[in-house]
Image: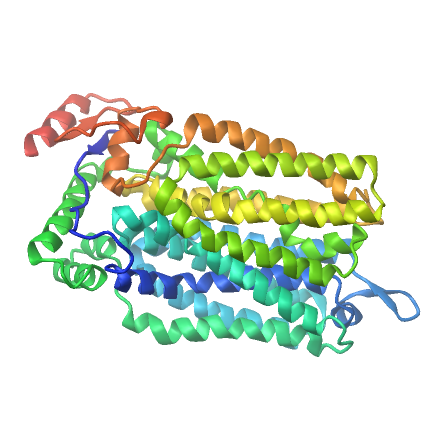
Length: 517
């Protein structure tokens, strides 16, 4: 196959401040609201495992008046959500290409209505499993389409800021859920969990009302041949002060990328994401999508079995720090870019995980260990939500090649969610008292994984701040080392590099495209 190297940048508009791009910012905020649902659901389901009202319906009675959750049931209600996320990510490539980003979000909203209704009304296990799977599919669509949408509509200078909106969405969802769970966890009726589930209706209602008024992405419209629609969309997304020539220049850059992609489209296939420069992009994207916050998914339950007093309040503290960190990510990303913050984040998280592991190995059952756990997790998630969390989403949305964007993104998300499923499926065995009962010693698993990710980030994750999506293709195809992305000087032409593949048509393809430019 032949890889395209496009050195042109998106047309720089005269302003790159959030104030002047407020229309694009507000539109991205509305889209990012969808991720409140994902964060909210992860936290309430974690809380259900320590909520008497839920345990009385779905748990087993161990002794008179005392109920517990079965390990298998605990695994399924958490891991089936991840299975749904995997299914959605696998379908995102062809689905988004045909229907677009807005339609995908609308369909995800409809799936949410069905999934939540099932979970609210049933009182037996197997329908609940179906509801969890469907909700996972909806959440997978929300996450995928949010990243695709924001990465395609944001100007290059603000793409990091707007792309990181997904993390505050998740964080606020976590916090709202922790507060509601704390208020209802002493309720001994099934309303204690039904009310929490019913809150999930809010996000799809908001989206169904808002989506008809939001523009489709210009890149997708141009792929459909709708140049006038793309111009109208880009005009709505850019500052009112933007001139017609600036809009046309930015559209021309996108059209040129699409033209070259279509010239080589006959050689584009799923397997292409595993070759040449696209393999490097795929590896980095997969790495960014591997969630390194497994304890947070089980925070309340983890605090409970670790002997922390008032585990629901401890979870609120944890999620409050998470929200604060995610809000700090906006100015930090704008000021320092991606790579330095990710390195600092992984280094800090590595130290925190090893500290937790050592403390619970030396003194597993002491009150001081419980307090240290809360403090270290607050540091961990404060740093995670300010650096790794938002920037992983941003880099994931930026790196894939234009002609393989939705496919690369879908595969990376699938692999990322597979690891998430693996974590939530196996975690109960490690932390439950009737299984391995590791408690805080489970951090021995996450310390090394954070360290490995830090090393990988240092050598392979580049700085993408201020680069147009088309520029990033050139940097990868020219095999620029990750540490030199920020200083590399772009060429002033479009060229085609034989990145991989074989056949007699290589030189002809290269000459043909260069001649057209």
